[in-house]
Amino acid sequence: MDYLTAAEYATVTVPTAALDDPILRIGFSLASHAWQHCAADGTAAADWDMFGVLVDGVAADLYVGAPPIIVAIDDARLTDSPEVRSVTVRLVEAAAARLDKAAGDASADTRQRWAWALAAARLRTGVEQLR
Amino acid sequence: MTYGHWLDHAQAALAEAAAAAGRDTAGGHADTAGVMAARRRTYLELRRLAGLISGVDAPEATTGHADLLVNAGRRMSKAGPGVILGAGCWAAAGPVTPSRPAPISALGRHLAEAATALSTAGDILASHLDPGRRPRTPEGAALRAGAGRTGGLADIASLAHAAVQVDRRLPRWLGRTDPTLRTVYRPVIDAAGWWTRSRYPTVLRQIAAHSDGTSVLRTLDVAPAGSRATQLRPITNLADITDVVDTSRAWLFGHAAQATVGQVAAAARLAIAICATAIRTPGAAADEVGASGNRWKAVVRTLGHVADLGGAVDSSIVDRCVAATGWLAGRIYGAQPIHPQWTDTVKALHGKLLGLADASHAAMLHAVVGGSVCVRSFSDETERGFERRGLIHHAAGRWQRASLDDASIEEVLDALRSVALANTGEDIPAGERQPAAVARAAFPAAMTMFATPARTITTSLLNHRDVRQTRSRPR
Image 1 (tube, rainbow over the protein chains, first blue to last red):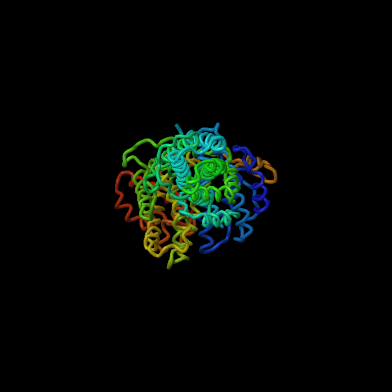
Image 2 (image 1 turned 90 degrees about the horizontal axis):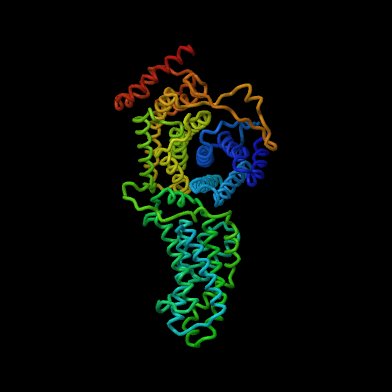
C-alpha cells in the first residue's frame, strides 16, 4: 500500500479507535515513515526534522517497551509535496485530537491524563513545523 | 480544592447572579457600585485565566478592537481563542467604576463570589508557574507546552458565556432605579450591551464546544511549596539548551554504566532539533549542517529497532532533552528568520554535538554489554504474522536480548560513530571501520579527559568491539 492511502485511512480511523487499537501506533509509524523517507533539502528538510523529532518523541513516550511494529508501506521514498505534508499534518492532528479526547476522560488516571494532554500538545507543535 | 472545583463554584455563582439580575432591581448607590465593581472583577479574572492557559496576554482591547479580533476569528487563524477570549473580556469589563464597596444585593454577592472563585482558580494555575510565567512544576511545564489548552479555554468560554447571561439582564436591573445611576453607569451598560449583541456569544459557544470531555487542568491543585533548588529549571533561552547538551554529554560519559537507550534517543532527537535550527541560522553552512542532521536522523532511525530491556527509566536527562527540543521547536525555530543575535550560540551548540555523539556511543556500548538492551527480532514467524487493520498490513515483532553481534546494534553504533567521526574529515562506510586506530584518533581528548575507570572500560570495550568486527569482516 502506498503512503498516502495508508495515511488517509489512518486519519479517518484514529479518531474513533480505542487507545489500545494498533491503528494509533500505526499512525505514528506512518508519520515517522514520512519524516524518514521524504526527500527534502535545506530548510524543507529542517521543517521535516523538527516535525519528526517531536512526533517520534511522543511515540517513544507513549509506547515504551511495546513490541516493535512493522507497517507494510510500498514507497521507499516520498517527495516533499504539499499533498504529502497536508496528509501527514491531518494524520498527526487526528492523533492529537484522539489523545486530547483520552485526556478528557475524567475516569482515567490523572497522571496518565496529563501525559496524554502533553503528548497532544507536543504533536500540535510538531504539526506547526510542516504548515 | 482543585482548579475545577473553583470553576464549578464560579459557574454556579454566575447562574445565581443571572437569576438575581432577572428577579431583582438595583438598590442604592453603594449597592450598585458594589455590583459594577464585582462584575468588572469577574471579567478581569476571566481574562487572567485565559492568559494563564494560552500563555498569551490578550491586548487591553476597546470594543472596536475586540470586534475586529472576533470577526477575523471566523477562521480562528490569526488570533487564537485565548487572545479572542481575553480581549473580549477586557472590553466587556468596561471602565473602572468609582468605588468598590462590598455588595449588598443578591446579584452583587453572587458576582463577588464568582470573581473570588475565579481569582482562586487563577492562583492555582499561577502557583505552577513563576512570576515570569515559566514553569516551576511538571504540570506547569505541561501547561506551558499547551497541555489541556483547548479544554481549559473551553471552560473559560463557558464561564464567559454565563457572564453574558448576567449582562443581558443588567440594563433591566439598572433601568428600574434612580435615573442618576443610569447616567453614572452608562459606559458599563454600553459595554454590556456591546458584549451581548456582538458576535462574542456565538464565538464563546464555539470555543466552549471544542471541549473534549473534562479538561485535565481541572485536576490541578495548588503547587506544593518548594525551595528554589528543588524546583524545575525551565528552559528559557539558548544558554539553557547549551547547558542541557553539556549536562547530557557529561552524564552519558560519566555514568555510561547506567545509560539507557531512551536517554541516547532523547539526546539524538535534541541534536536533530539543533541541526534544524542551525540550518535556519543566517550564514549557516547549510550543506555541512544538513549532513550532520542526516547522520543524527540515521541514529534515531536505528534506535527505533532497539529498546531498554527494563522499560522506561525516569530520567532527568530525558526530561531535559525533551523540554529543550520542544522549546527549540516552539520558540526559536518558529521565529523566522532566526534572530542574528542567536547565530553564534546556535553555531556553538551545533559544534557541541560531536561530543554528544561520542558520549552516546560510549553509553550505548555500555548498555549493550551490560545486558540492558533488547533488539527487534525478525523471524519467519513475524514475516508470516502480518495482520490487517482495515486497509493496512502490519506485524508485531518481538524483542530479544541484544548482543554486540546483532545487526541492529551494529547499525546503531555505526550511526553514532558516523556522527562522532564526522569532523575528522574521514567518511568511512559502515562496516569498513578501522579498529583501534580510528577510535583513538576520534576520541583522543575524551580518552585522556575521562581517564576514570568508567571511561577506561568504555575504551577497552570500543577496541574489543572493533577488533571483533575486523575479524569478522576482513578488509
